[in-house]
Every structure is written in C-alpha cells, then in structure tokens.
Length: 385
Image 1 (cartoon, one colour):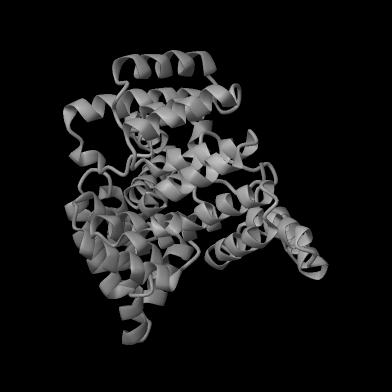
Image 2 (spheres, rainbow, N blue to C red):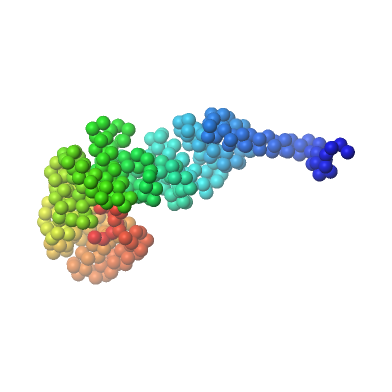
C-alpha cells in the first residue's frame, strides 16, 4: 500500500535493519560501484577527472586490478609516465594475465628511457597474445622496433613490424620504422634532419610495399630511392636486400657499392661476405669480414665468426673452420645455423661424435624456431642458406 513491491521492501529492510558494519559494507560497495562507473565513463574524454575517480575507488577497494590498469592508461595519456608505470605494476601484480597491460607498461618504460625493461615487458605481452586493438598493437610494435633500431638490432626490429603487414593501411610511423630497418640506420626518428627523413620515408615506403605484397610499387620506389639518393648511407644496402630473392649477383654489386660508399656499414659487409661464400669465392669473403669486423657491434660478432668458419670450410681448412664456428657457438648457442656448420666442420675434421651431436642440436633448434628461415628483407635470420 505504500507504493512499493514486497521485494522492494525486503531489500530496504535488509539494509536498514542490518547491523552497522553490514550497512557500511553495503554503502561502500555502492560508492565503489558509482565511482568505478563514473571513472570508466570519463576515461577517454576527461582522463584527469578519471584518475581522481579511480583513486577514490581504489581507496575503497585496493584489490581492483582493472582500476590500476585503467588509471595507468589515463596517466599515460597525460604523459605522467612514472605514475603510470607505478599504477600499471600494481595492477599487473594483482592480475598478471592482461597482455595489453604489459604492453602499455613497456610503452611507459620506454618513455622513461628504460629500453631493456620496456622490451622485456613488450615481449611478455606478445607471448601472452598482444592484440585486439589494431592502433594499440601498431603503436606498441613500432615503439619496440624503434628501441631495437637504436641498438642496431635491425633483425629483431623487423620481426616486430612484420606482424603489422596484416594491417596494410597502417599510418606513417610503421613505414618510418620500416625505412630505418631497410637502411640499417640506427637513428632516433625524432632527431632526423629533413634531408635524411626524406630518405627514410622513401625507403620505408619501398620496404613496406614489398612486405605487404606490392612488389611493383616497391620496385619503383627502390629505383627512385637509388636515383635520388645514391650516396646516402644504407640506400644501396636496402636495394640489395630487395634484389636478394631475384638476382643475387646484382644484389652483391649493391652491397659492394654500399661498403665502398660507407665502409662502416657493417650489415652490408656481412651480407656481402655471405654472398661471396655462396658464389664460391671464400677467400674474398674472408677478406671482407676481416676488413670490417671492427665495426660490427658485439652482439653480431658471432656472424663474423660463422662467415669465417663457412669460408674456411669451403677452402678445405677444417681446423680453422672448427675454431671460428666454436667461437660463434659460444656467442650464439641458440642459432641453428651455427650448429649446422659446426657439425659439417667436425665431420670434415674427422670428429664424428661431435658432428653427430651438433647435427642433433641443429635439428632440435630448427624445429623449435622458424622452419622457413630468414624474415623478409633481412639476412640475419636463423635459417641455413
């Protein structure tokens, strides 16, 4: 008769006849629900207001993992990276299953100049299944690629960008990062001078066109790149990579031109030596590697030893080959190619048991890694060629 259903009154009685502690719990829960709803509603349009609401909600429920993650996203939008990192870590401590949370943490850490930790957390997100939001995935992968490019890890940078080829209409930052990989240029994209940016942009357009299955567009862009910037670092190298699948002799000529123009361009030197071995001139390969090894970053010295070992194999010098390939193995034990060539060197040196062991290890690693080998556009993969 009071205008309420019996169920409504029952709820009211449960609240107002409850002990004070229960009434407080109910009130806190309602307050939390209201704050969390308003915070999420404000997240995209009013991140500053959202942060305040999240803080109030978390004061009521400190185990709300999503609240910390949402607040971290809002702080990231406002470029409050240290605070965002703290919030995201708290959220991930409570719920480490959020792949995109690890990726966002990596983005924050990259802004705080903690590249190693940023890459570690981005890799963790990829292992868990980064995805679900194309612009976000692109931003994460491009940032990871930029960090890797700065450390001259061009192969890993390219591996970060390769999954984005399923989104061929991505914006300019993807092409820019692709251009730095194609040129093997360890530049900070924010510090590029206008004339160098033009080179990177054109190289990126060419490389991205090739990666997204537009070879005619890529060929035209590479020819334009070569015509306009024939002496810019990395240009002949980039064109040589493009030619690798169709004309290895022409590719070798481009790598030789790159080394002639820019003697410190160690990626061109390494691919040049590999091609010289394949074309039956191991002595030239040895000369190439020994002339440029001083310019190779420590992380890639194993490739120098592997090329020297391969050249020694072709020159029927098994003892020297074993020494070089064992040096490569100490630096890169997870690379199947090293085990493959070391097995061949041991066999040629009459060390059958060692050869069998390395062959077994090669087959195991090859099965665990990419069975198809070298990633598109880059020679530093794990396959045996």
